[in-house]
Amino acid sequence: MTISGPALDDLRSALRGQVLRPGDAGYDTTRRIYNAMIDRRPALIARCAGAADVVACVQFARGEGLEVSVRGGGHNASGKAVGEGVMIDLSPMKGVRIDPRRRTARAEAGLTLAELDRDCQRFGLATPLGVVSATGIAGLTLGGGIGWLGGKHGLACDNLLSVDIVTADGALLTASPTEHPDLFWAVRGGGGNFGVVTSFEYRVHEVGPVIGGAVAWPLAQAGRVLRFYDDFAWGCPDELSVNARFQVAQDGTSVLGIGVAWIGPLDVGERLLKPLRSCESPLADAIRPMSFVDLQRGSDAVYPPGRRHYWKAGFLRHLGPDAIEVVTQFFATRPSPLAMIGLQQMHGAAARVPGVETAFAHRQDQWDCLMLGVWERAEDDERCIRWTRELYAAMEPHLERAVYVNSLGADEPERVRTAYGTNYDRLASIKARYDPGNFFRGNQNVAKGA
Image (tube, rainbow, N blue to C red; front, top):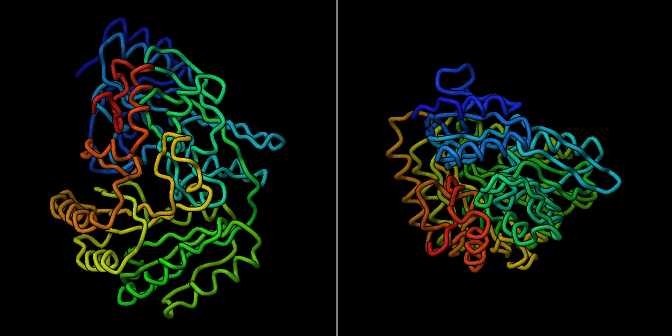
């Protein structure tokens, strides 16, 4: 597809940011995202400098009848950020304004977790986000946002006070509890279905030094450790979150690691973590006091860009013996040393919000069970995808009929309704009001009658 002519000239003159087409300097760098399997070539990339640029892009795409995709951080493995038509690239939009007195942060949609965390921490503050610092705040927050602060302060979307959003008719609206409250409800978990959010206003909290890091055990001990971990996680106070992950360590050893985040008095955290650190004679113990910024980037080395990804996921309430056997056996037969199986804990404040209060419906103590096919060579695509699908099929009897929308793959449209449960029909009604033509469909799409 080639885009040219007076309409394109008008778009170029309207934007403060860049317009890139195939062959332009920077085009290939900008179209590439975290998952190396995604190799699409948009007809046009608009590198937006502000909300007015986004308005102009939406109006241009509507006028030309072009598909739109939206890139924030480009970290989601499904690859929805890159389409074939107009890619609205928000990554140049990096503005942040912290108000320490009101405990709020206004953040533009191109920021990563690392960038927002850094600015908030200059005032000893933080807001709940995710667990990999290269992730964009936009997609993470719009899908819900499960992270280290969830037990104490809820999901990212629970801490939203307002958003600025460009809707399908090219209008720039503010959505909040008092302005367009139905739209505000929908964007707190409903993804990119309702428009392009250009900025987020968050509630922020005092967060000083924390306890973070991980303990690791050899694969042979994984079954016993996971039985202990199931009980330990269910007993966690709000201030403590514990995530488990099967992976290969830097020295090539297959391990089960349990990462921790204690957000409270350090002496209390040290005491509460003793039973975990003494369980089954671990291979390594890297738990220690650290800054919140260091906690947030603790998993970055495990999730570098440029690898090939195929993910499956579902919410898991209990780690029973059969589920433990499935994950340990499948990890032992993984087709790639980069493949992982993770359990990201959601509990405490995040689990106590009523399921109808935001679009994120699945509010209970649980794990996001992540089955992560990760590899490097295209020739390994088939066997790595097959392993991930077979693992999911074996785990499915143990999972809830629920999934975190940010963990959905590109090939799972039938599970979008499952991601929203009883909130789906209300989301579809709001979608029909603000985007009746389904202009914003390059996402985990909500549609009436689906």
